[in-house]
Length: 166
Image 1 (cartoon, rainbow, N blue to C red):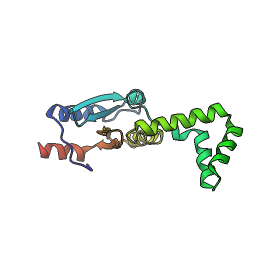
Image 2 (cartoon, rainbow, N blue to C red):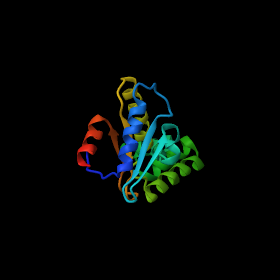
Image 3 (cartoon, rainbow, N blue to C red):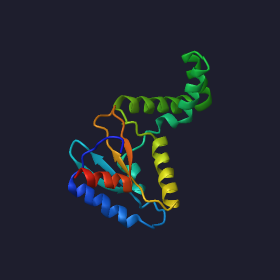
């Protein structure tokens, strides 16, 4: 485990119980993901299916309008000319909606939880299960919008470290 997080006894029991249940199971979107709020010592178990509802991933940077706009700026285009080019390609309303969404996510913060990280979790979890391993993701929630959520994996090693620290 990257950081030494503190868990309550009931959390450890839930980890162990869930870990044992998954052994030998076939991949499904019903597989669990743990969300841990360190400030309140709250542990919540959700399914992969419900994860995007619980932790909305920021996909504002994935919008084609934003990608094209950043690409034009990286190529050295003037900001105003880049905007005009995106207006022509995507339309004024769509381009500004994408810019506004991007700006809103940046201003409120997203704990670093992007659509890319969300899909990497799904793909990684599936590969683990298809390799007949048992690991369960636990997302340690950031304490403020500028602190990224941390992804850890509950494994045999993780559980043995918890038992030793009891």
